[in-house]
Image 1 (cartoon, rainbow, N blue to C red):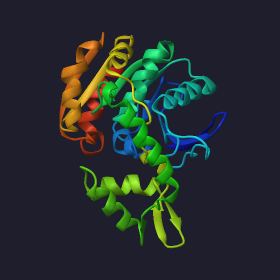
Image 2 (cartoon, rainbow, N blue to C red):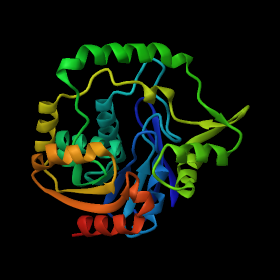
Image 3 (cartoon, helix red, strand yellow):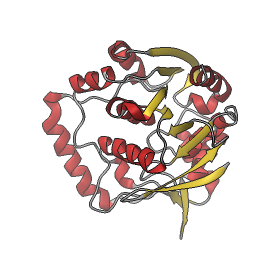
Image 4 (cartoon, rainbow, N blue to C red):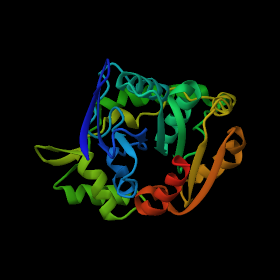
Amino acid sequence: MQAVKFSLPTLSLAGWQQGPETQQVTLCLHGWLDNADSFLPLCAHLTELNLVSIDLPGHGQSDHRSPDAHYHFLDWIYDLATLIKSAGWKQVDIIGHSMGGMIGSVLAAVMPQMVRKLVLIDSLGLVAGDAAKITEQVRTAIHHRWQSPQKQKPVYPDLHSAALARQNQSDFDLAAALILTQRGSITCTEGITWSADMRLRESSIYRLLPPQVTQLLQDIQCPVLAILATDGLDMMQQARQQYQYCYSQLELVELSGGHHCHMTQPEKTANAIRQFLLS
């Protein structure tokens, strides 16, 4: 395994690469407020793949967006398309967890030539907005942007304490929390704090509406594997009912476990991914 860094026009993305570089690139996209190391347990069981796992902008060791910018969902798509183009990858496979799966889904729809196969881990469809609540949505987002500069990140005396705090907000054990905390934290004068950009917690100023989500999903041309956790996010079961028939080539697999099943059940998750990507 080796550290990698990709320079885009406005920021740099950090991550790591494992496996034979001559093989098809499999790009790993983590979930909201996670980082590239969420795929470490999984990569131990996928050594035959050329895995490239990145920290999305504002996460892990990647750059934050400029002070005048925010984290719009559709900007992630631009970031990934620019990465694939600048890295010279003609076509990639994508493994996306949660938000990373949603990013990969839209990329596969709008840039079909860039994505060969798509794996979604406890991710299906997209988070849609409510047209009747657009006024409230924009108002809330503006207030969040006003408040964001005044907010302070929590500080912990040591890495173990930070990992315990991360575990308390998640569905995995302390070992998994430590994996994410080691990459997702920085030292400060008082101890340890999170490296993630505070603006990631701001409410979205706009969300795609259900008809737009449906259209994007219908425009995905590549084969899709969705690995859904039996005890994952409630919204995934709703998404399954609402969106599963939008995909032209969808294979569904259920795994026992919670939202981070790729960390808690890495071997079973890897087996499903291997069978799909290498077939």
